[in-house]
Image (tube, rainbow, N blue to C red; front, side, top):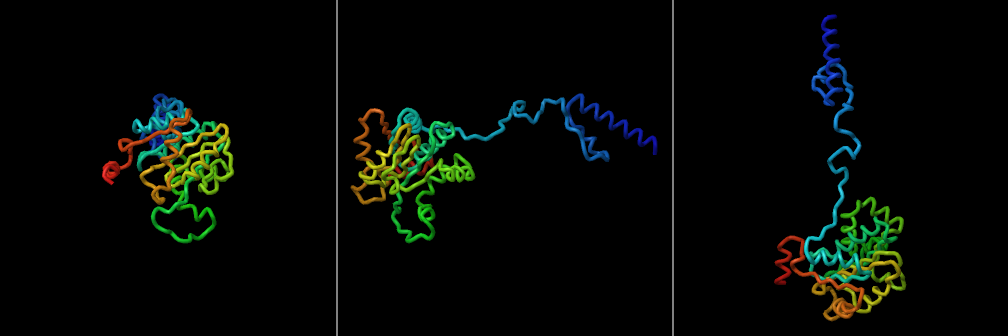
Length: 263
Protein backbone atom coordinates (compact mmCIF):
# COMPACT_ATOMS: atom_id res chain seq x y z
CA UNK A 1 0.00 0.00 0.00
CA UNK A 2 2.79 2.40 0.94
CA UNK A 3 4.71 1.58 -2.26
CA UNK A 4 1.57 2.28 -4.32
CA UNK A 5 1.16 5.72 -2.72
CA UNK A 6 4.84 6.53 -3.32
CA UNK A 7 4.51 5.55 -6.98
CA UNK A 8 1.38 7.69 -7.37
CA UNK A 9 3.08 10.70 -5.80
CA UNK A 10 6.04 10.29 -8.14
CA UNK A 11 3.72 10.24 -11.18
CA UNK A 12 1.97 13.40 -10.01
CA UNK A 13 5.29 15.20 -9.47
CA UNK A 14 6.57 14.16 -12.90
CA UNK A 15 3.35 15.29 -14.57
CA UNK A 16 3.47 18.71 -12.90
CA UNK A 17 7.07 19.20 -14.00
CA UNK A 18 6.19 18.21 -17.57
CA UNK A 19 3.29 20.68 -17.63
CA UNK A 20 5.46 23.53 -16.34
CA UNK A 21 8.21 22.80 -18.85
CA UNK A 22 6.08 22.38 -21.95
CA UNK A 23 2.98 24.37 -21.14
CA UNK A 24 0.59 21.51 -21.98
CA UNK A 25 -1.95 19.50 -20.06
CA UNK A 26 -1.30 15.79 -19.77
CA UNK A 27 -4.37 13.57 -19.96
CA UNK A 28 -2.87 11.31 -17.31
CA UNK A 29 -3.54 14.02 -14.74
CA UNK A 30 -7.24 13.34 -15.00
CA UNK A 31 -6.83 9.67 -14.21
CA UNK A 32 -5.86 10.54 -10.64
CA UNK A 33 -8.10 11.36 -7.72
CA UNK A 34 -7.65 15.14 -7.75
CA UNK A 35 -10.31 17.13 -9.66
CA UNK A 36 -8.52 20.49 -9.82
CA UNK A 37 -5.56 21.00 -12.12
CA UNK A 38 -3.35 24.03 -12.69
CA UNK A 39 -3.53 25.67 -16.12
CA UNK A 40 -0.25 26.00 -18.05
CA UNK A 41 1.35 29.40 -17.52
CA UNK A 42 4.42 29.17 -19.77
CA UNK A 43 2.68 28.22 -22.99
CA UNK A 44 1.97 30.50 -25.93
CA UNK A 45 -1.74 30.76 -25.12
CA UNK A 46 -2.97 33.64 -23.01
CA UNK A 47 -6.47 34.90 -22.21
CA UNK A 48 -5.32 38.37 -23.22
CA UNK A 49 -6.56 39.18 -26.79
CA UNK A 50 -3.22 40.64 -27.89
CA UNK A 51 -1.61 37.21 -27.59
CA UNK A 52 -4.27 35.44 -29.62
CA UNK A 53 -4.22 35.38 -33.41
CA UNK A 54 -7.98 34.96 -33.66
CA UNK A 55 -10.45 37.81 -33.90
CA UNK A 56 -11.96 38.43 -30.50
CA UNK A 57 -14.98 40.38 -31.73
CA UNK A 58 -17.35 40.02 -34.65
CA UNK A 59 -17.77 43.29 -36.52
CA UNK A 60 -19.66 43.60 -39.79
CA UNK A 61 -17.61 45.56 -42.27
CA UNK A 62 -19.63 47.74 -44.62
CA UNK A 63 -18.43 47.07 -48.16
CA UNK A 64 -20.10 47.90 -51.49
CA UNK A 65 -21.17 44.93 -53.59
CA UNK A 66 -21.52 46.83 -56.85
CA UNK A 67 -20.28 49.96 -58.58
CA UNK A 68 -23.58 51.70 -57.89
CA UNK A 69 -23.34 50.97 -54.16
CA UNK A 70 -19.75 52.23 -54.13
CA UNK A 71 -20.92 55.45 -55.80
CA UNK A 72 -23.67 55.87 -53.21
CA UNK A 73 -21.30 55.34 -50.27
CA UNK A 74 -18.81 57.83 -51.71
CA UNK A 75 -21.59 60.37 -52.29
CA UNK A 76 -22.72 60.07 -48.65
CA UNK A 77 -19.15 60.66 -47.47
CA UNK A 78 -18.73 63.83 -49.52
CA UNK A 79 -22.21 65.43 -49.70
CA UNK A 80 -24.71 66.65 -47.13
CA UNK A 81 -27.68 65.78 -49.34
CA UNK A 82 -27.88 62.56 -51.37
CA UNK A 83 -30.79 61.20 -53.40
CA UNK A 84 -30.46 57.49 -54.12
CA UNK A 85 -32.88 56.21 -56.75
CA UNK A 86 -33.06 52.63 -57.91
CA UNK A 87 -35.09 49.41 -58.11
CA UNK A 88 -35.87 47.11 -55.21
CA UNK A 89 -33.00 45.11 -53.77
CA UNK A 90 -30.17 47.54 -54.52
CA UNK A 91 -29.44 48.16 -50.84
CA UNK A 92 -30.52 51.80 -50.75
CA UNK A 93 -32.13 51.71 -47.30
CA UNK A 94 -29.55 49.37 -45.78
CA UNK A 95 -26.57 51.45 -46.92
CA UNK A 96 -28.18 54.69 -45.74
CA UNK A 97 -28.98 53.30 -42.28
CA UNK A 98 -25.56 51.62 -42.01
CA UNK A 99 -23.83 54.90 -42.84
CA UNK A 100 -25.98 56.65 -40.23
CA UNK A 101 -25.00 54.12 -37.56
CA UNK A 102 -21.36 54.43 -38.60
CA UNK A 103 -21.47 58.22 -38.23
CA UNK A 104 -23.19 57.97 -34.82
CA UNK A 105 -20.68 55.45 -33.50
CA UNK A 106 -17.79 57.63 -34.72
CA UNK A 107 -19.24 60.69 -32.97
CA UNK A 108 -19.63 62.64 -36.21
CA UNK A 109 -23.32 63.35 -35.54
CA UNK A 110 -25.44 63.55 -32.42
CA UNK A 111 -28.50 61.56 -33.47
CA UNK A 112 -30.15 59.55 -36.22
CA UNK A 113 -33.56 60.49 -37.60
CA UNK A 114 -35.29 57.90 -39.77
CA UNK A 115 -38.48 58.86 -41.57
CA UNK A 116 -40.87 56.98 -43.81
CA UNK A 117 -44.30 57.73 -45.27
CA UNK A 118 -47.16 55.78 -43.68
CA UNK A 119 -48.68 54.70 -46.98
CA UNK A 120 -50.46 51.36 -47.37
CA UNK A 121 -49.02 49.14 -50.09
CA UNK A 122 -52.21 48.50 -52.01
CA UNK A 123 -54.33 47.09 -49.20
CA UNK A 124 -56.07 48.55 -46.18
CA UNK A 125 -55.08 47.21 -42.78
CA UNK A 126 -57.93 48.94 -40.97
CA UNK A 127 -57.74 50.51 -37.54
CA UNK A 128 -54.81 49.01 -35.66
CA UNK A 129 -55.04 48.79 -31.85
CA UNK A 130 -52.60 50.48 -29.51
CA UNK A 131 -51.00 53.89 -29.24
CA UNK A 132 -49.31 55.88 -32.01
CA UNK A 133 -46.11 53.79 -31.95
CA UNK A 134 -48.10 50.56 -32.21
CA UNK A 135 -50.10 51.86 -35.15
CA UNK A 136 -46.98 53.02 -37.02
CA UNK A 137 -44.86 49.95 -36.26
CA UNK A 138 -45.85 47.98 -39.42
CA UNK A 139 -44.90 50.93 -41.65
CA UNK A 140 -41.55 51.53 -39.93
CA UNK A 141 -40.55 47.87 -39.55
CA UNK A 142 -38.03 47.89 -42.45
CA UNK A 143 -36.07 50.62 -40.67
CA UNK A 144 -36.00 48.58 -37.46
CA UNK A 145 -34.73 45.59 -39.46
CA UNK A 146 -31.89 47.61 -40.96
CA UNK A 147 -30.95 49.03 -37.55
CA UNK A 148 -30.99 45.65 -35.81
CA UNK A 149 -28.67 44.25 -38.47
CA UNK A 150 -26.02 46.84 -37.59
CA UNK A 151 -26.73 47.04 -33.84
CA UNK A 152 -28.24 44.64 -31.35
CA UNK A 153 -31.90 45.23 -30.58
CA UNK A 154 -30.96 45.88 -26.96
CA UNK A 155 -28.65 48.71 -28.04
CA UNK A 156 -31.23 50.03 -30.52
CA UNK A 157 -33.82 50.26 -27.74
CA UNK A 158 -31.31 51.95 -25.43
CA UNK A 159 -30.37 54.54 -28.07
CA UNK A 160 -34.04 55.19 -28.83
CA UNK A 161 -34.76 55.64 -25.13
CA UNK A 162 -31.95 58.22 -24.96
CA UNK A 163 -33.29 60.02 -28.03
CA UNK A 164 -30.19 59.28 -30.12
CA UNK A 165 -32.26 57.30 -32.63
CA UNK A 166 -35.64 58.63 -33.68
CA UNK A 167 -38.03 56.90 -36.07
CA UNK A 168 -40.94 59.04 -37.19
CA UNK A 169 -43.44 59.19 -40.05
CA UNK A 170 -43.07 62.01 -42.53
CA UNK A 171 -46.23 63.70 -41.29
CA UNK A 172 -44.50 64.60 -38.02
CA UNK A 173 -41.48 66.31 -39.62
CA UNK A 174 -43.07 69.65 -40.48
CA UNK A 175 -41.67 72.68 -38.68
CA UNK A 176 -38.52 70.96 -37.45
CA UNK A 177 -34.86 71.92 -37.98
CA UNK A 178 -32.55 68.94 -37.75
CA UNK A 179 -29.06 70.02 -36.67
CA UNK A 180 -26.13 67.67 -36.02
CA UNK A 181 -28.13 64.72 -37.31
CA UNK A 182 -28.10 62.01 -39.96
CA UNK A 183 -31.52 61.92 -41.62
CA UNK A 184 -32.71 59.01 -43.76
CA UNK A 185 -35.93 59.44 -45.74
CA UNK A 186 -36.98 56.01 -46.96
CA UNK A 187 -39.60 55.07 -49.58
CA UNK A 188 -39.57 58.64 -50.89
CA UNK A 189 -41.46 57.58 -54.03
CA UNK A 190 -44.58 57.60 -51.84
CA UNK A 191 -44.11 61.30 -51.07
CA UNK A 192 -45.69 64.11 -53.02
CA UNK A 193 -43.65 67.01 -54.39
CA UNK A 194 -44.84 69.24 -51.53
CA UNK A 195 -43.90 66.64 -48.92
CA UNK A 196 -40.41 66.20 -50.35
CA UNK A 197 -39.91 69.95 -50.48
CA UNK A 198 -40.89 70.15 -46.82
CA UNK A 199 -38.54 67.27 -45.90
CA UNK A 200 -35.53 68.56 -47.80
CA UNK A 201 -35.81 71.96 -46.12
CA UNK A 202 -35.54 70.34 -42.66
CA UNK A 203 -31.77 69.99 -43.19
CA UNK A 204 -29.82 71.85 -40.51
CA UNK A 205 -26.19 72.57 -39.69
CA UNK A 206 -23.69 69.70 -39.52
CA UNK A 207 -26.30 67.29 -40.84
CA UNK A 208 -26.49 64.75 -43.64
CA UNK A 209 -29.69 63.70 -45.39
CA UNK A 210 -30.12 60.64 -47.60
CA UNK A 211 -33.36 60.26 -49.56
CA UNK A 212 -34.02 56.80 -51.01
CA UNK A 213 -36.76 55.52 -53.27
CA UNK A 214 -37.78 53.69 -56.42
CA UNK A 215 -39.78 55.93 -58.79
CA UNK A 216 -41.17 52.82 -60.51
CA UNK A 217 -42.66 51.38 -57.32
CA UNK A 218 -44.93 54.13 -56.03
CA UNK A 219 -48.09 53.22 -54.12
CA UNK A 220 -49.62 56.63 -54.87
CA UNK A 221 -51.90 57.45 -57.76
CA UNK A 222 -50.09 58.04 -61.07
CA UNK A 223 -48.62 61.51 -61.33
CA UNK A 224 -48.74 62.25 -57.60
CA UNK A 225 -45.26 61.02 -56.64
CA UNK A 226 -42.78 63.88 -56.64
CA UNK A 227 -39.50 61.95 -56.35
CA UNK A 228 -38.61 61.95 -60.06
CA UNK A 229 -39.37 65.66 -60.46
CA UNK A 230 -37.37 66.60 -57.35
CA UNK A 231 -34.38 64.49 -58.45
CA UNK A 232 -34.33 66.10 -61.89
CA UNK A 233 -34.48 69.60 -60.41
CA UNK A 234 -31.74 68.96 -57.83
CA UNK A 235 -29.31 67.06 -60.09
CA UNK A 236 -27.64 70.25 -61.46
CA UNK A 237 -27.36 71.85 -58.01
CA UNK A 238 -23.76 71.87 -56.68
CA UNK A 239 -23.00 69.87 -53.52
CA UNK A 240 -26.09 67.68 -54.02
CA UNK A 241 -25.56 64.12 -55.26
CA UNK A 242 -28.19 62.18 -57.20
CA UNK A 243 -27.18 58.51 -57.44
CA UNK A 244 -29.11 56.26 -59.82
CA UNK A 245 -28.80 52.55 -59.13
CA UNK A 246 -29.66 49.99 -61.80
CA UNK A 247 -30.53 46.30 -62.19
CA UNK A 248 -26.86 45.26 -62.00
CA UNK A 249 -26.73 46.73 -58.48
CA UNK A 250 -29.41 44.37 -57.11
CA UNK A 251 -27.93 42.26 -54.32
CA UNK A 252 -30.99 40.19 -53.41
CA UNK A 253 -31.82 36.83 -54.97
CA UNK A 254 -30.80 36.71 -58.68
CA UNK A 255 -34.46 36.19 -59.57
CA UNK A 256 -35.22 39.70 -58.30
CA UNK A 257 -33.03 41.22 -60.99
CA UNK A 258 -34.65 38.98 -63.61
CA UNK A 259 -38.15 39.98 -62.51
CA UNK A 260 -37.32 43.69 -62.41
CA UNK A 261 -36.24 43.47 -66.04
CA UNK A 262 -39.60 42.11 -67.25
CA UNK A 263 -42.17 43.53 -64.81
